[in-house]
Image (tube, rainbow, N blue to C red; front, side, top):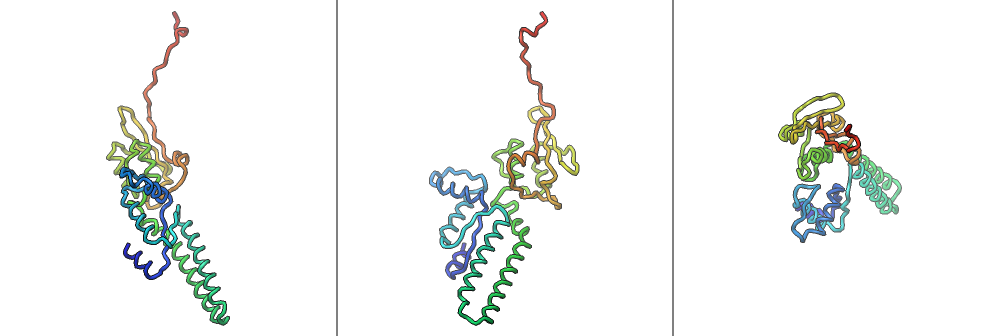
Length: 242
């Protein structure tokens, strides 16, 4: 926060990006803050929302934007850089053609360099949020909900962390193929199987930060009883042989 306040005092340009689902919940938190009973779902502590509120109060004249992925941030920065570029052209319009040419080329090279660096470092950018208080990966949250842990906040970065959690909750490895990983558990005397599509993991066995619809996630994760107990059928009197 001290760095932000110093940047504001020095009239530096500040861009703040907040993950979309966290930003939406922050507005709900602000509206219900006075109740003292707000329970967050996208972050694991209301201190995160307090921190966001402090940022909003400190930099009111600077952009605070929501984002879903790196492409959103890149497109926004490109638009901002284009605006700065146009502003520079207007300021330099009265100068000589040679000096204006060199200024434009310098700014253009800077924009190109900043954009390329940002694209190359996008993986490192999102890795900073892996397993942090800022976000729980949707896939991990969906797995917890599927097996009955709807209020459980699990920060699992890779297969090893996920399997440690599953083993601790009674699941055992059953089968692994190039397409799926399967785990079994005895729940209330009934064998259940959890199937997880291999596509949710990257080549380093890390869990991908996939943001897709619940219906699509259901195609990647399945949880069901292996042999469900038979249901009692109701016999109609007309079906009796006597």
